[in-house]
Length: 258
Image (tube, rainbow, N blue to C red):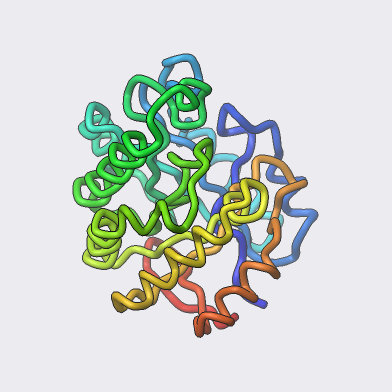
């Protein structure tokens, strides 16, 4: 199989201690890491989480020289309205193979922090999906929209709850398709956070709207989660009639059959 994990982190992200070398031992194929970029990162105490691009590139170049160029460059951009200008400034002049776009926070708190437990779930969902749509609309050049369910992972959300927000979700998917982005199947979301049913619904909605681009990522922060439940996610895609994944080299999309 030529498709690979398109969402992973190393020690170049503050919430991971994993090394490139350990990932390289897991496969003889391609790798890409998608390190965090989150300004005023609520999950990290409000400090800026900024990828050291020079050190990251130096590390990859050194490893590629002895590993047949198997490592690609990636970044996961965390959007807030307040950080938009800084995101664009950071990305300018830098080269990545794939750019993931995410919403992790609203500028005050991260959606995985306990404060969410005290809030009205529908209010959280409304705010989160609106921020996701704004992120895709505002940020040009991103390739993959990651973990659409990040903001609702702490909530007791069912497929019926998602259906209440179908107009908002369709609006988000419209923006994703307008930007020629891929929709990510985040396998930790699906099988660690038990949101596979939510993904089944979202994939079906996307397909009904004419969506064709899917990305597969574990969101691994260590080798323990590398390619996490990929066989299950592939089986779901095949069941729904999907026959290939979208991957990126130099931010140019290409298909790999599953």
